[in-house]
Length: 176
Length: 253
Image (cartoon, rainbow over all chains, first blue to last red):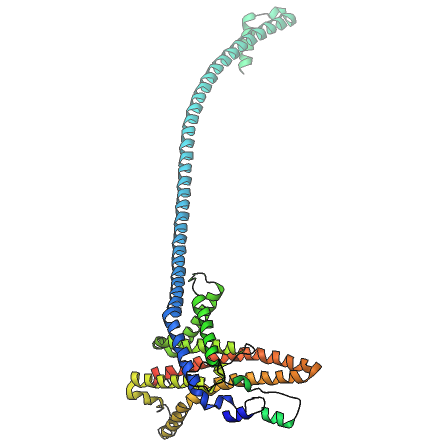
């Protein structure tokens, strides 16, 4: 086949070069060398390197995920602590408020009681004064009424002028 | 094909198979088994490309990867996951071998798409060696791990007893055909794609102003080839995983 090739005018190959068995040893020899070289490069350098990179990446991602989980846990704990502190502060505030309210109430009650006492004392005094005034007024009225009645009687019926009787009548009338 | 074209005396000067010719790198002598040829050159470039991608690309060892490291990691994870899904945890022991095959075929295929490049994986000699290596290794692993029980792979206990000998015969034939289909699938795909592109390129040279059509066709086929090239590397690797799984778990079906 090769001789035919050389015989061809422009050195073009006749038939399938793939079936030229003269070239097989050459191809097989170089293929075996190539495959052995590739195998050693891959097995010694490339595969361990890529495997370690992939493993390292896997570990890194795993670590980061764990760390994130941890941080998330911490955040949840911090939130809980915050909420607890807030609740405590609320309770304390309400305690303070109620204590203060009680104090104020006490003071207020005291002040009110004092004021009440003063007011009732003043009221008693006032009543006494009012009574006095009323009594005085009543006496004055009686006097005035008796005088007026005496004068009227004196004017209308001078004969029947009896000061004592008039006064008694006026007093009885005022009481009725 | 080229001889016919020339014999017909047409204007076409298409030699789609010339790109697959193995030539010595220096001079015009005979090709002995150790002669440095274009096979040597392009396999060397393949090795350099693999080093660039998987060794230089990952030298940062960054937790947040660079682009090249990201590509290397994606390929690694892809093959690793494929092997684990198909052959299980026991199969991961053979990961470096599967990865070697996959990355070599993938990179050689992609480099073959560079215009003017020599596609090492388009040669049956190359793919057959890999397929036979897979076949032999997997068969040895099967007998080593399961002893004579590995033959249970051919004795389908779920089938009716009468059918079992016939099925066993079919299974054995299909088992021995595996390396043939395994290797020809890859070499055939590579050869066909490159030959088609070359044929269109020949038309483009001969059609003058109408060469725009073959050029568009080349672009389309090139895009398709880009896909085929990756799929064939994947298919070769996944079939290797499937064969390995048969060897590790012969009672699997």
